[in-house]
Length: 188
Ligand code: GRF
Image (tube, rainbow, N blue to C red; front, side, top):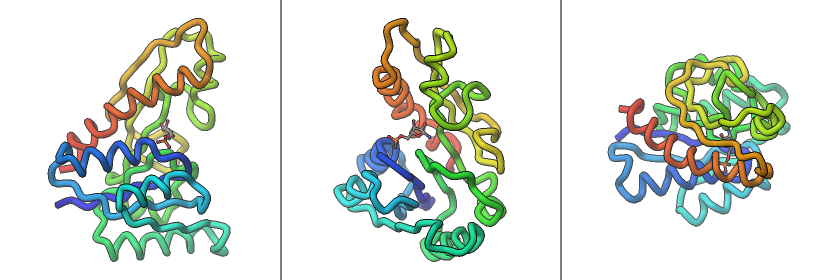
């Protein structure tokens, strides 16, 4: 079994989707040890409870430095034997401590066709751009914001009358196919 931990700051639909893939045997050989969240009010916590996945809530504001926050996470990760970290809507730059321990074993998903529309509100950026296609990218994590090596992308249309919610839903549907597919391919 390969142990993965999933890091989420908000809703957690990708987290839920990955866990459901694992729980229904669609990601054989993979075990989700826990949800790691930096937000005590996040909806992902309710999803984890329903899915019977352990939850670690650790908020950087409760630590005097980012390094101490990440060192605490590293202790938990090591205790659980976590080999890979899956970022799924984790709204922070990963710092040196986590990177040193997990570089090359940490994935992220971003709702654009990187290198386009890095950072916050990629869906809004895509809508404002006038482009007619966008999509989602799974990439390795490095010290930059959405700059790591691209593994795979999937694309969808941007329709002229799209609202942000409509486009976001279309991209999320892609992500729910793309992320498990990449995890199955990369994590062996
Ligand atoms: C996803 O669109 C992902 O690409 C981005 O954050 C969003 C998280 O959505 N990094 P959810 O919490 O999985 O619903």
